[in-house]
Image 1 (tube, rainbow, N blue to C red):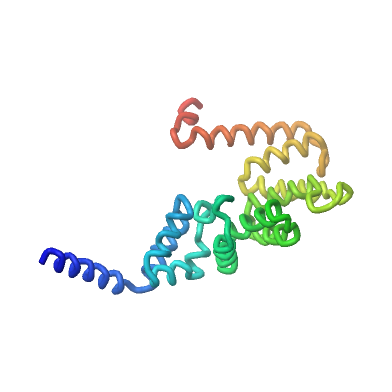
Image 2: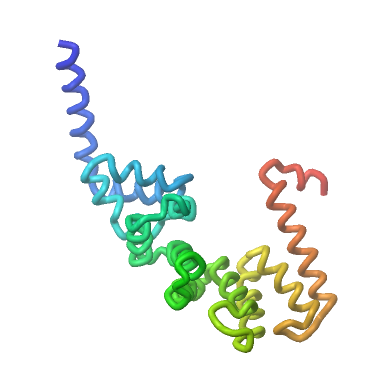
Length: 215
């Protein structure tokens, strides 16, 4: 008797879920994909049932997937992980373009495709992608030292710094100090380096409010 009641209760809850419109479930899944703390938080939902799997792979949901949802560890890399990132890219996810671009460029040694994916993210003002492309230009990755494009690297750094990327701001400061790819301006370079250090320190202490309270 107790078992029968339990089964009826489970069936009733299932009916309630099935009664939710797709738009509402997709909205909830968008929130989950953008705020999940690790890939498994999202993947576990996809394997719950056929409906959640179908709606979880909806382009709108995949386009919202955040960095933590897409952060596949090297030991977990597989054909399925690659395909998932490709699906996110096809849905318009800029972060996925950057992540897969980095993987293909540095890990799989596919510099042409990797660079293209990072460029795709950079065009959409993705700061880490802009900074990564700047380093590629500075270091001559993918070509000989004669192909280094200092000005292009400095310009990419400047754009990433403008978007708030701290490492790019620091790199731009060094460029100005040394006259690397830009007209030398030691004072401005030092100012940017100080600003980068201050922002980095603020990021460390801001959550606790300790840094602000000491100003």
